[in-house]
Length: 328
Image (tube, rainbow, N blue to C red; front, side, top):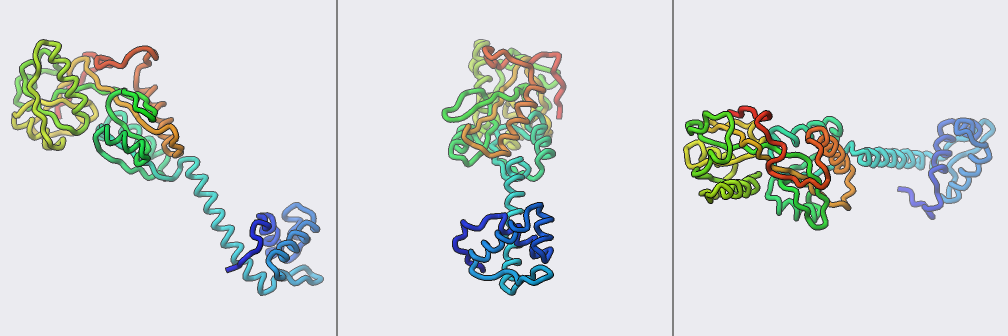
């Protein structure tokens, strides 16, 4: 391995001139190929030999030839420049978000809807970026974003979080999940009054904390505090509990693309739930910046324009004209 003193005195052009002279076997031909004066090539190579403390070329009437030391330095120089080229290419790809890593926290389904469309488009646009997904509770995701364990979290609500940037991106219809045998299953859509007196079961998993809150508010407004049983189970088990008649539950629109035996999905007219992205403003991950740009652009396409002063409400974006039958 070559030990060069002082290393800082050797410039990239020294190596370029050396490689050209070695390739052409002539300072004159090297200078012509590099579009510089022959004296510049000769002087830079002489400086390089001085820094290395050895001769790299034997001069003769027909040009120059590498010495044994020059042959060894040629191998090392080519290897060094290849590594430098790889580094430049790699950094450039990361800077263009064509490669790298992106850590994403989820509190919504990827089965369909906004996130499914977003990440399909992102993968097609930046296929070299590795994405690591994590399910979890919003409070856990926010803590992970602050600690830089996540680049971004997609969660319910529009609450601002200290030290973080928050952007409302999309809203989803709220659906009631009923046993297929339930009398209300025959209805194409529901209103809250039809759910008065029903027993509900909820889970702490996506995104039932938010829909639990709206459930309590809506039915309380109708004069009845609903009976809600919290279950420490995952979504699949919760759906099985609904199927065997232990209660109804609520879910968001993206989750309704997944079918479960014995249950049906019915939209609750005019009821939506908001979702946002949360990230650290100091996070300069190029892949994150590209994802945010695509998410904001898609949000403009997918969502109606809201005046800045208008609050985001659970009733917004709903409407019987937009309701579809969501039987599994």
